[in-house]
Amino acid sequence: MASVLKGAERDAGNMALGDHLAELRTRLLICVGTIVVMMIPAWFLYPWITDVLNQPYCDAVRNVEPEASCKFLETNLLEPFTLRLRIAGYGALFLAMPVMMWQLWRFVAPGLYKRERRYALAFTLSSLALFAAGAAVAYVTLTKAVEFLVTLGGPDVEIRSGIGNFVKFSMFMMLAFGVGFQFPVLVVALQMVGVVTPQRLASWRRQIIVGIVIIAAGITPSGDPISMLALAVPMYLFFELSLLLGRLFLWRRARREGAPETEPASVDPTP
Image 1: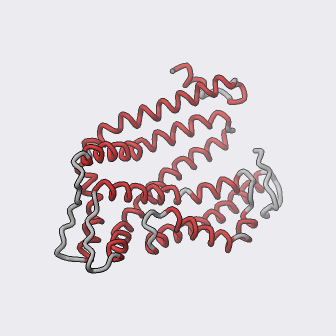
Image 2: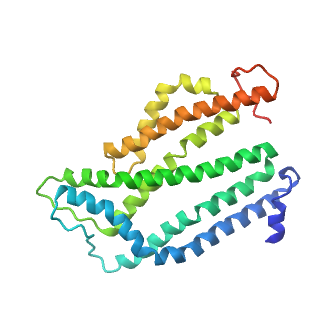
Image 3: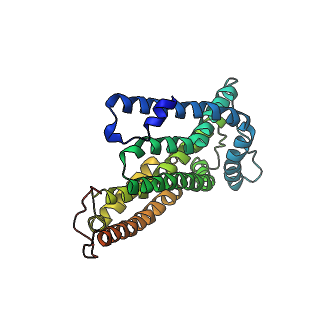
């Protein structure tokens, strides 16, 4: 394995297809091994994780019915063990995310120029921060999302969620928000490689806003308007920020190449 890792430092142009496949296999094994190892602390963090997930559920239920019990209801005797394994797996994915992103960057880094490697590292760190921010926003909106779903049944319907279903719902919601918050990383990357320009994206603003709303409505598990807006509004703000970053990048590239300091109609993707 050490010899394969050393190969990551070589220029990708000098690596044969077999070397690339061996490198990919090694990186994947490291990621899988990290997830397996991280399942151990996640297993013992189960009580804390369930307490954290119970809080928004409890707040939502008691906002609707102050005297109601906010404990989860489970009728399947085998579900607690399955749930603990599921939470250990979800927790391991979250804990292993920095290592996984680092391995991805190390895999693509040999094929990049020195200046591009600096950008790749920035993209990796930005992706991690945005994913964590998206998961945090999802957690904050969970209370309103659950409250909306509980009130849909009316006052004559008493709803008690199984802990397995709620964990799956909350984890999917945090995952959806984390993925949605990767939107600015994608937009900036497309501008940097010359696929689109800030001017072209600005001309598509109305269509992009409609697309953001549709995506936000589609990937939020609860489907409530509060969660949809909590995802759609940041995505739009990130879009505007991405345009500013794209213009700044093109302006700096124009200065470096000695061209007029105006935004070009197209960008040469080669460094």
